[in-house]
Amino acid sequence: MAHMPWTNQTSIIKFLLLGFGNPKEIQILLFVVFLVIYIVTLAGNLLIVALVVADQQLHTPMYFFLGNLSFLETCYTSVTAPRLLAGFIAEDRTISFSDCITQLFFFGALACIECFLLAVMAYDRYLAICNPLNYNVIMNLRVCLQLVSASWVTGFSANALVVGMVHQLSFCGPNEINNFFCDMEELLKLSCTKSLLVEMIVLVSCSLVSLAPFLFIVVSYILILLAILQIASSTGRQKAFSTCASHLLVVSLYYGTIIIMYVMPSAEWSPALHKALSLMYTVITPMFNPIIYSLRNKEVKGAFRKVVLQILGMI
Image 1 (cartoon, rainbow, N blue to C red):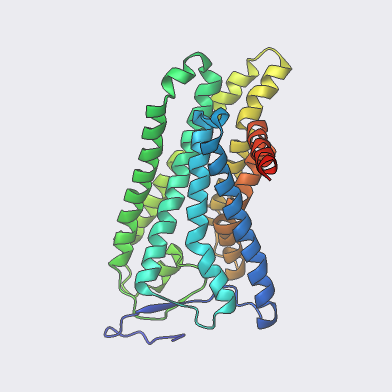
Image 2 (spheres, rainbow, N blue to C red):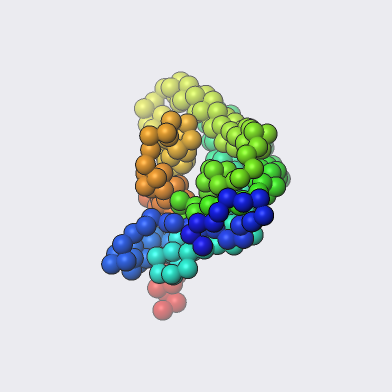
C-alpha cells in the first residue's frame, strides 16, 4: 500500500502517514515523551478552564476569552496527537480517506478559530488599556458571547469551504503523506487532478483567515503601545503592559511558527524540518500556552492556590 500506480481507474481509499521515520529502537521513548506532552497539555488547559468557571474573581472578559482559548487548545491538540502517538507503536500507519478529510477539517477549523480568538483577545486588551472608562460597558457578557460565537462559526464555515474543495479532488497515487497528520499542502501535492482554481481558493482562504486577524492584532498592539507610552508613571506603564504580556507572547509563539512555515520560502527545506515545525504549532505550542498564562498571571496562580487549599482542607 506504500505506492499505488497512477491510473485513471484507481482511487485511493487510504493514505500512509510516514511520520518521522524514526528507528524502532527509539519508538517507545518517543511515544512516552509525546504522551507526557499530550497529558501535560490536556491537564494544563483543562485546569485553566476549570479555574475560570469555578473562581468568581476570574469571571471577567479577559479570563472568559482565556477559558475559551484553553478549551480550543484541548480540542486542537487532540485532533493530531492521538494519531501521532499511534504512529510510534502501531505497525499500520494508514488512515482512510474519510478519516483524513475529517482530520483535515477539524484541524483547519480549530486553527482558524484560534486566529480569530487571539484577535478578539487583542481587542479586549485594546479596550481595557485605551478605553478603560467604557470597558465594562462595551465588553459586557453579551458582546463576549457574540465575539466567541462569531469566531467559532467563522472558523468552521471558512474551513468547510476549503475542505469541500479538496474533497472534490481525485487521488489515484501515490498515497504517502510525508507528515504525521493529514496536511493540506501534502494532500494538494498528491492530487492527480491538479486544479489551479482549487489551489487559489485554498491559498486565498487560508491567507485571509490567518493574515486578517494577525494584522488586526498588530494594529491593536501599536495603539496599545502608544497608549502605554502616554502613561506618566513607570509603575503604571509596567502594570498596563503586564496585562497583555502573556497574550503577546502566545501570539508571537503561534504566528511566529506559521510565518516561518507559510511565508518564508520553503523550497530548500528538508521534510524533517517541515515536520518539526508542524510539530511545533500542533503539539508543542498548545502545551506552552497554559504555562505562559499561569506563570505570568497572579489571578490564575491565586485561583489555583485556593483550589489546592480547598482540596487539602477536605483531606
